Each structure stands twice: as structure tokens, then as C-alpha cells.
Image (cartoon, rainbow, N blue to C red; front, side, top):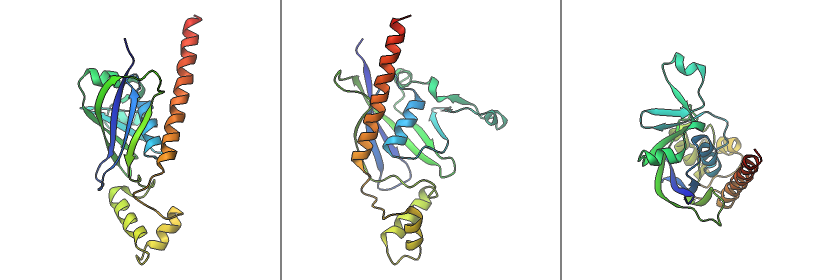
Length: 202
């Protein structure tokens, strides 16, 4: 059977204009690997907790504290995109940083046959800069953008010092994002080749 891929659109919710990225990934990708990919394409810095919500189930990194709160979290590494596609899931939610509460919608736009000459995941495009870490969620980001755009804003100098440089919401270093995804694809390819070699020598 030919290798299958999914085209995904990742949208950051509660921010206008929409911040989004589009990628193609193998259907064998599990949700933990998808988390790492989303971190790379937004990009986030991956030092906060995360969670996927698919229907009534949450997937992430389970903790003993979850049970104390009456909240069951399933292992993200145990759920693959191919299973979601098989269940006719069209979209699901990804939340990063439970303090700032960055909610993303992941839309499965298309499922098709992989190009044998392409290493996946593959970055396809996107628009606008993701918020800085720890800016305070959507309300904090709105205040940040407003202050950074106006040199006369009372918080402008403080925000420049905090962020360390000017901020352009329309530019997000697309070439760096594409390089990050290529690096992820290269590591995945090496891991797959090693797995195949080990399987053949058993």
C-alpha cells in the first residue's frame, strides 16, 4: 500500500488577523511528534505543557496529578493521525502553555499519497508572526503589538527591552521555519532507516 500523508493547517485561535501554518505529514505521525512539529513551525520554544483535544478525549503527557483533578489524559505518543483519519476526524484542538492558553485548531485539509522523492514532514506556507512566549495570552499579545507599533506608547520602551528587538507581526522568518522542518524530516528519515535495519537483522 502506498505511503499516505495528510495536509494540515494549524491556526492560532482568538487572534486577528489569523496566524497560520500549513504542513504535510505522514499519517503514521503520532500526536507527540505533531506537537514537536507545531512547536517548530509557529515557532514556539517548547518549554510549557501541551494538550491535544479530539472530541471528548485529551492527549498529552499524563501526570499523576491528572487523576486527582478527575481528568484523564491519554498518551499523545499512542495516537496517530491515521487513526484520527480512520475515525473521520476533520479537525481537533492543540493547546500550548496552560497559563497563556494558546489554542490552535488543526484542520485535516487533505489525505493523499506521498511523493516518494519528498522527506516528510514538509512545510508548505504560513502567515504572520506567532506571539512571544509568556506575553500573557491573546489579551497580552494585543497589548504587546499595540505598544511595539507605537513609539509614543507608554509601554513601548519596556516592551522593546523585554522582547529585545523590534517586532513585525507580518514577518516570521519563514526560511528559518522551513529549515527547522527539513531538519525534523531528516531526523525522521534517519530514525526510519535505523528501524528498518534493526528489523531486517532480527
